[in-house]
Image (cartoon, rainbow, N blue to C red; front, side, top):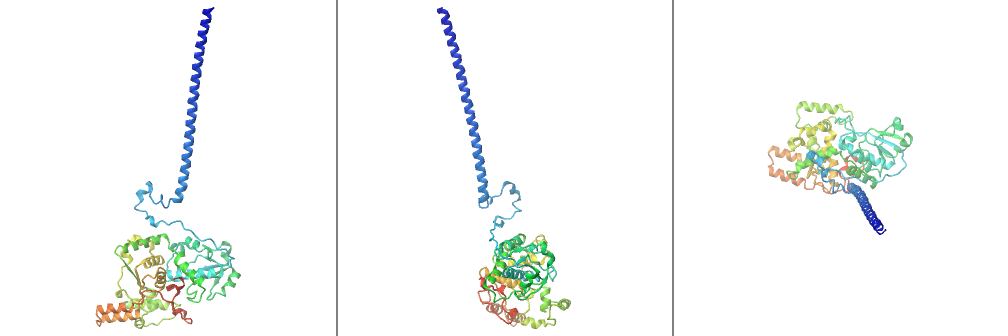
Length: 447
């Protein structure tokens, strides 16, 4: 019995030992399983945290990207760096004023006439008229049929979206007339403000087929004068393509130091209508005269060119000036886009003239006047306003040998000492508005 009991106890001990080993094994397995679960949980939490960080970084990148991240080129953009524009040419996000809410009295359609800068001034006037009458302006049509024969539309020269959005706190501007009103277009002409408002309320749409000399130079409310300036200096921005090429020309000119822009208004239309034919042969004189007689709007037909020149009413000839043309700075391929688009070429001239160290117009045309006023707005940048009557006399005396170069040089400088575009008041002639100083040449209310 003792032996059996001993064997039984030994068997029990072995059974207990086996059971203990199984429990230990199970415990180890449970611990390993818990450890693995913790590891997977840790990985899941880490992954979640990483994705959260990535989302936050992307959000921060959208806000700070233009300042920190986006100023550096990506790897994919490196091969194209030589063809891309520089960082300074990237337009920052623009902030526009809130819309002005007002009762609309009708729609104004405008067909501008003349060259680019005559149309530019007219656009400023038409925005001011629209604001004054609480009406909606349709983006103006540009002249395509006159001497310049440029088929460009508004959006081909100006940034149309910037034009509309930057002025929306003053006036509502649409790219086209609402469809329901397109059949109700009425032709209208006005020279004073009072008669047009009843026409607008009656017909809803008025079309002005000419825009020259619509607003007076003086006697208008200050807020209207300031709005004319705002449109001219801020809202009328050229397209990115024109501005980029303008910057390129300016960079090339500045490589050699300060530069002067000479606006030589020696063109067929000006020579024909002014009668200034100095430097032209007989065939050219006959062609210019025929062009003047063929124009029914030009009343002065018989003109004495020599008398005009002595009175200082003619543009200087190429022989009387020295100049560097943009054609000598740019490749023909770069100017290909502007071929047969004289208004776009005039926009390029405008940009370069605005940025020059000195601007010298040889004739008082629309471009000369508008650039002069814009340069005044930019801090009275030096603009030499030639006294052509004095200058022509000095040139003739020098050419005849009666005056030395030193005498000629001193006399020219002395005659223009106070004609450098410094601050002054506009000359007002109430009974002769076309003879008084032009508003856009000296917008004193905005300076």
